[in-house]
Amino acid sequence: MGNWLRNLRFWLFVATFISCAFAATWYAGQFDIYNPLSIKYGLPFAFALMFILLSHELGHYFAAKWWGVEATGPMFIPLPIIPLGTLGAMITMNAKTIPNRKALFDIGVAGPWAGTIATIALLFPRWGDYLTQHSVDQISFAIVIGVLLTLANLMPFGQLDGGHVLYAATGAHYQRVKWVIMILAATFILVSQKIIGPATVLIFIFFGGINHWPTNDDMEDLDAKRKFLVALTVLLFVSLTVIISLISHVIFSGFRPH
Image (tube, rainbow, N blue to C red):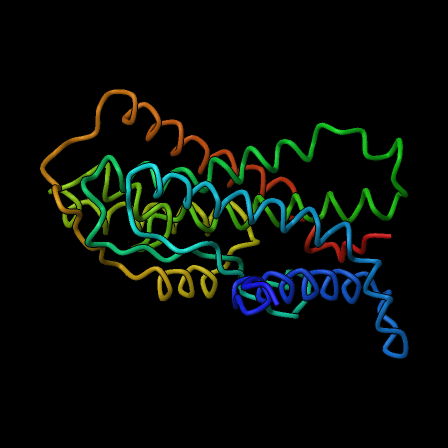
């Protein structure tokens, strides 16, 4: 047997794929308890969402490897609860091997942008030319969920991607600005749309934390190119919030792919 058969990450990937397909099938009202293969209805959703999640995590992973930071491969988290089917994915890093704020920024920002590019890539093909309508709807729903998960990861809390970006951008000023940024970001999210409520924000604060570990050299500032990318990432966060606000009815109107 190959080593991949004994690899926990491989089986978590498989379990998450099945979990996503099950959640989408159940949410669409198409799951038949007497026919487990009925989860094939949710396969387009599972393929599309896993593509977005894998792209996100590989963005982090390859950026970490570029900087020589010790990092594991992506680990997916299955959760067979509708409509997501997953709690997302993650890589783990040895914080002691992150050389400076530039490295932290590159690693933190690579995931959301890779996930966003993957999401955009799913928008371009004319799926309706060679897929059934229900498959197109499933992919569209995965895009909505992908946007939501990217937005959630960009929240400027602790160990979330947005927290990495905030720490890398502010350095020694992090402790002074984090509370202001967190309050403004949470307020903006809560008043601008319904899909991320107070409970969800508190959950992400709980998992992300409010503090951030230092890099090996916090004194080196970001260069001009990275500061420009900080501005673009803030714009991405605001844009995704607006998008989710505009399409929140897709979730709350009882969207059922068919």
